[in-house]
Length: 88
Length: 184
Image (cartoon, rainbow over all chains, first blue to last red; front, side, top):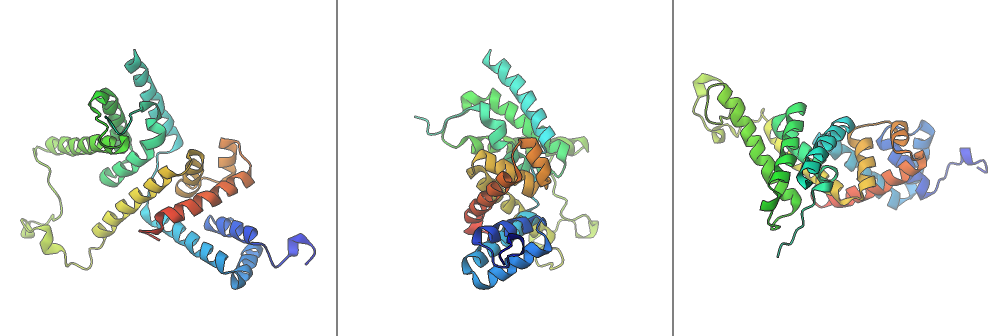
């Protein structure tokens, strides 16, 4: 337990960080095990995990869409040209 | 006398995602949606003097956008030789003339309702996003909505991975709190 890497009990900060990574499938199996052990005894983090999962779910369900970076850049350029004319 | 100010310099940063999401849920075509958003900003710029400050900038831009979307549908309809906007809610000729109400009970057609709800949810998400600090909103959007890799975002914005996760954590807490009342 003294070796940091193999520590089973983690702090809330670490647990929440793993929970965030889990939302993007970026947590390792060992990290997820540590998170779940932490959740067994920590009510606050259980709450956070619950809300976090719901947030992931609704963003996915909403099918919300944004302009991709290049389209936005183009939009900005064209708009700024017009804005320039507008000021003169 | 006006309560709201108008400042087009920040329009693209502040409203382009919101307007785009609003449009895409109504026209379902990326290119058309992008064009409509652009037309809206340009029209807004031209008619800035008509802005009375009674509504927020965003509401005002949305009202222009709504007209652009209607115009768009008018145009594609008139190309087909029809002068009016028609709803294709029922394509088989046998039931022609039936109104929407008569079809409400159909339990197998849940998609329209889901879609409507999703539009509202999408707008709610955009609303909450606009309340975040700009940097947080940008990173949350890239990671969560556009699904960029952590590494790609870090390279693009020149931040470290631990910076990114701190911001993601704060943004997620803020988003969850903001959406809590109606959606979580």
